[in-house]
Length: 65
Image 1 (tube, rainbow, N blue to C red):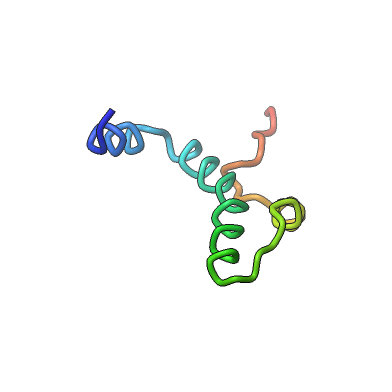
Image 2 (cartoon, one colour):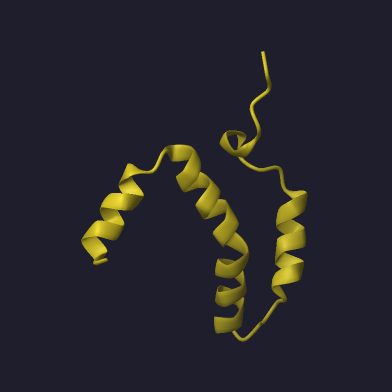
């Protein structure tokens, strides 16, 4: 699969799926950024911090009406 197909596949995803994937990528992104700055932080600590933060409304399960 080439980069154009990857972009087309990403654009075809529903907004909720894009948000979920971005939300789940936060711990790794932060860990890599901190390591680059020579201030490594364990991903477990970042994931624990993220778990305490309320997820965006689109990630919350919908209530049955």
